[in-house]
Image (cartoon, rainbow, N blue to C red):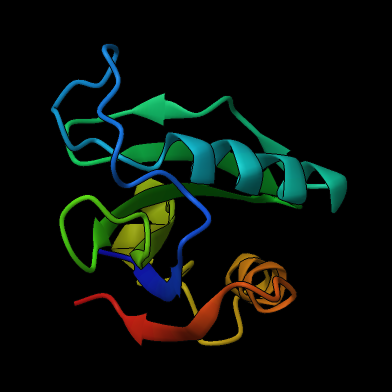
Length: 135
């Protein structure tokens, strides 16, 4: 996978209320996806509306000439608590020719990863913001 992970901790988003429209009972991340979409659009990034998968929520974004899939989900530190760890997977899409040539890979200094990290670090109630390589 051509991706990077961003992890952080916060109690800002829902990790307790299971909504009727969730595909799975614990399909959290809808409010994080909506919040992040607004932040990205304000910075000039084109974004889809949030979508749901069985593991969480996603956005499809375009920035300059690149396309990305942002997947997000969270895990509560304990049951009945909104405090928890969130993961945003930033997958950079590549064309078939890029894949065959080995180009278009997501780099450590990828603009979208850096932008999302900047957005997360600017929030005073987000802790332990860090990146990890998605293997």
